[in-house]
Length: 300
Image (cartoon, rainbow, N blue to C red; front, top):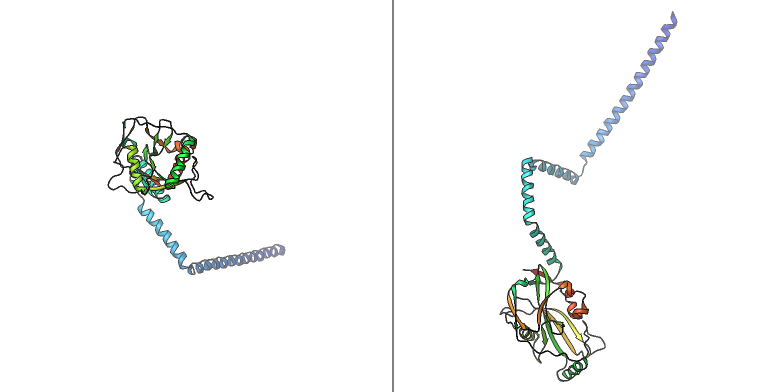
């Protein structure tokens, strides 16, 4: 009968030991939790002012977003209005944005007008003769001996059709294309000669109004010898070039009329047709698109 009492006592002692062990573990866990909470509290207390300001700004922004959030009806009405505006003014806005980017990226601005604003008339035909190459070289040599280097000016007249730039060229009976212009007289300035030649070739005084200013110099070409070859720079071993040709951009008015002989045409050639087409238009005219790349063309 004494055996069961001993067993019960042992069981009770074991339960007491287990409960004490559990209590000890719980106390250790509570102490660790308290230490972690104390560390977090210290971190918050020691937080730099910059971080506190950033946190406050983020909370304030979130709060303002919530306050300013429109209702479902307001959002649907606003979206419908925005879509209507975008469809009506989308093209104009994109064009304005593109023009603003271009104006910041390139140089001077050239105002060009639509081709429809210009009229073209005709007058009596003129006699044109094509000189032989040898005869032309002899005449150039004789002129150089009398007057020195020949000075030539030509006008680059630009219009646009469907917002694409075109250059006005003279087409001779031989099929050859050239710019309006010509040789300057001795002592004549480039401005005076350009006005005289363009007025004579196109039979118009409307291009050069009272407020006309000298156009932008587009490029210069040099003739080292008496042959037909010209270069966009002075050849180093030639100390006395035989001719200097200057191309000027001449701004056109919004409307004017041109009159030409019946056997000469004034044609508007798009830049994409001139570009890299020296075989058909020659090296000077075919280089005009590259030369115009530094300008901002404003379509009016």
